[in-house]
Image 1 (cartoon, rainbow, N blue to C red):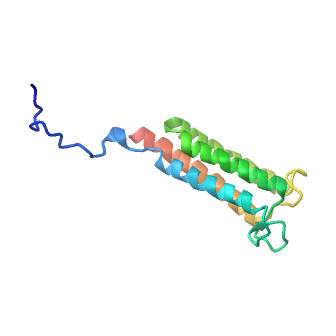
Image 2 (cartoon, rainbow, N blue to C red; image 1 turned 120 degrees about the vertical axis):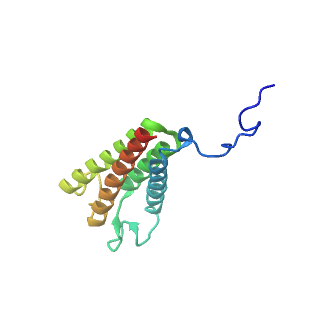
Image 3 (cartoon, one colour; image 1 turned 90 degrees about the horizontal axis):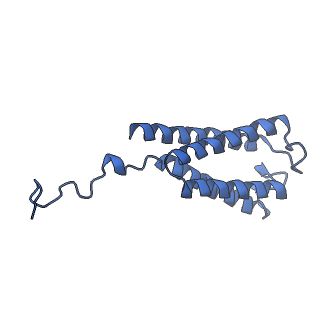
Length: 150
């Protein structure tokens, strides 16, 4: 029978080791929060309300197509946050941010997204697209950095 130096007791049991760190926690949490928010916005857009709707006084102007886009991108964000790990999580989070950066640029050029939306996006939409783009790219880069230093 062989005993280790600790007399059979593992004094490191339960401690977080360098190998155990969740280097993608920021990116994963960001993508899950973004996914839930986009999914909720897409579903809420189908209900008359002052936040996300076709009403003129709504904070975010949406139509059916825009709601579907929010639902789909929300599901994509949830998929990324729930299933991806390591390098794939970092890259997918950055790609999501780049996609939203392209959406921002496209809607700045054409607020109705070249006729796809019945209601043109407004300044609040542009701000949200910028936050989604910058936040996703930053979270993905943080996950890459953490992966390198882990």
